[in-house]
Length: 183
Image (tube, rainbow, N blue to C red; front, side, top):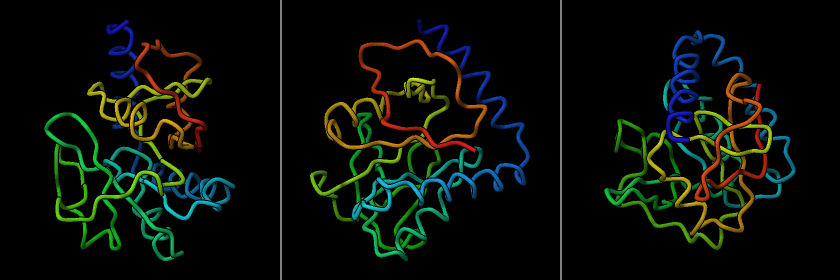
């Protein structure tokens, strides 16, 4: 199963890196529009988002606009124990720094988010399948987080259309998302 996941991961990562920045930004805006029109997002007072990597659906405008709308926003801080701590932010540019794997994440001094107050968790992935199973980057951060900390939370995956495949190999520890939004 590991080999099958690695093959899919490699193929999708290649497609992500070869997509033009212009096309990625256009699709990112379409994903943002769909997310913001989603009832779960509209109703959420406190949203956990993530800072996207360059090749992923861009979340910069999503984070900034959610904050402007008055929503509380948390982002993941990856720890050396391969876990995620949710940290609340109020300004994306001021409150983030480069962290593990070069990903923008909250500064350690940011306030820990009370997970009971988070209404919606928005999750990255390399790929999703039609049953909302997600394939991450292979480190297990989000599976651990979703299985323990966000077990009963509504979760949405953001992806480009080519990141959704018919079926993914699924281990017992793999946690599917509630919904996937694509463009």
